[in-house]
Image (cartoon, rainbow, N blue to C red; front, top):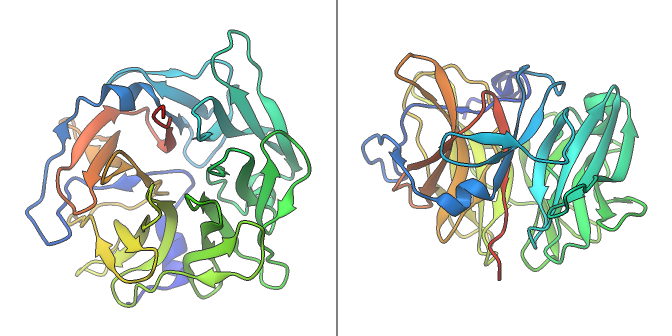
Length: 338
C-alpha cells in the first residue's frame, strides 16, 4: 500500500474531527446503504460524547448526554473545556479530561448526586502536545473498575481510580511516539492501544502490569495505520479503524474487526465516495454484534451533520441512532445493568 506516515498525518488533519462519508457498503461489497432511523432509546439516553465549537481546539469543548434522537444536553457537574468521556464498568462514574490554560487534568465524576463534584486523579502541565502526545484520546477503565489507563507524556499511564500515583505502562524514551486509545481486555490481563512511530502506526498490546510490547495487527495490503481498538465483550474480537487507499489514491478511514488470536481480518465498512477527509475515529462495541461509531453525512442542505451510527460486524444493518452536536468527537455508552 502506498501509504506513508506523512500522508497519514495529513489525513488526520486538525484534532478533533469525525469520519466523513455518505454511504457504506458491507464487507462483501454490498450496495451502498442509507442509514435507517433507530429506536435505541436506552442507547440514546445512556450515551455521552464531547463536542467543540472550535475545530482543533479544546477550548469550549463540552460533554453532552443524549436525551433523544435530536436533543443533547450538557452533563450536569462536568465543567466546560472537558472532553473524551469514559464510563466506568458499573456505569456510576464518568472519567474525562479537563483543560485549564496549559494544565490538563484527568477527572472522575460520580453520577447520581445532586451536587457532585469531579475528583481530580492526575494533573499535567504543558498543554495537549506535552501531556498527551497531541491526541488526548479517551481514558479506559479496567474491567474491575480499579484502574484507569490513559495517554500521558511519552507513553501510556495507569492510575488507581480511587486516587494515587500513576504507573508507567509503556515507555517511549528512546524513540518518542504517540501511544493512545488504550483498551483493557475483558479479563484485565492486557491493554491494547495504537502506537504511532516514525515508520508505522498500528495496534500493540502490553500486559496490564507493564512489560514487553507486542504488535498485533497484520493488515498487509488490506489496511494501514490502525488506531482506536475496542475489545468485544467476550475478548474474541477487536474492532478498530484503519486507513485504506481508494482507487483514486485518496485515503479513507474504514472500520475493521480482527480476531484477537490473529486468525482473521474483516473489513466492516467501505466508504466509496471521494469526500474531504478530516477525522479522528472512535469505534466502540454496542449490543450483540453491533459496532458503534460517529459518522458525518451530508444533510439535505448540503452541509455535513454528525450522527451516532451503528452497524453489524458483518457490514449490514447500518442504522442512525441520534444526531450529535457539530464537531462531535469521542463517545461512551453506559454499560447495561447486570
